[in-house]
Image (cartoon, rainbow, N blue to C red; front, side):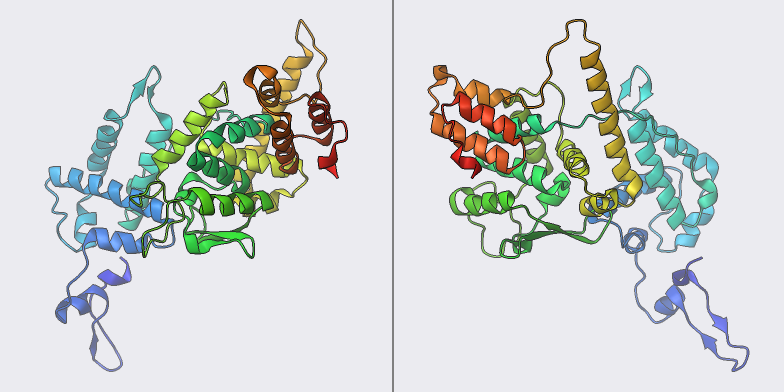
Length: 389
């Protein structure tokens, strides 16, 4: 067992008895820590969100052990570990899977794998690896990556809600996870030096990300015009109400969901889709995969390559479908983005100068090429193209 459970031992040379670990603490009158407290300390080094999930799962395990008559209130891990057996753990597995949502093919595979993985980690902590479960392999599903044009439409559509717009820009420009953006601290947004620090991320402790000029400009405007003033002592960057409410995962997911509807995105896009877009966009710009992996905070390059390989397959399938169409059309990579065409129509009363400003922003964000910008400018009666200078 681990050091905290070691018994007293004698020193053969001196004849003295040395008290070590938890025995020393007990005999000296110091209170031993509970099993959950010891487990939490054992998990140190993982992301805080991961630790919270594992601790919640441990409570479910301990409740199950109580139903088998095992006293889990003891602070001696070895006592509980000795009473574990295959029958108890198998019944726990069956109990967990019974509660999962069922489809035509049975319980959700991803949920099963996650439960088994967390159970195996707890068994490792209890030093009962002999009882760990074999985790079924994941069914590989091609995940779609949004195109540059789709991202541009969503950013434009989100402008009707300042909070949504800020979130869309953060997701697009940093490639951060939703939880990382949710927990970003106001003090860690350094506009002068142009970087933001994400604290206690999933795979690393801290990660510093260089901010783009567009993100810096957006943050300045958001702070000055839209963001609710933080209450004294508040640390979080995002304040989404005058009552000082912080950003949460549900708000981010709702923001992406609503903006996708406004932008008429025809498939289910999630906050993580922006992360995939950032990875593939950097790849298309010639950034080395190792640098992309470090930028995103991936544990290994293999995870980054999963994003890129999915993107390559999606791109190849789209190109193949276009080439094999029964009614071929002349494809062009410089087509005017659909939302610009819609807004430039005289029916909605949009001013050409506003459309030029929109097109200029997209050009600066590299969402459209210079050739596309020329087409838009010409359609708006601005052949001089002064914005390109």
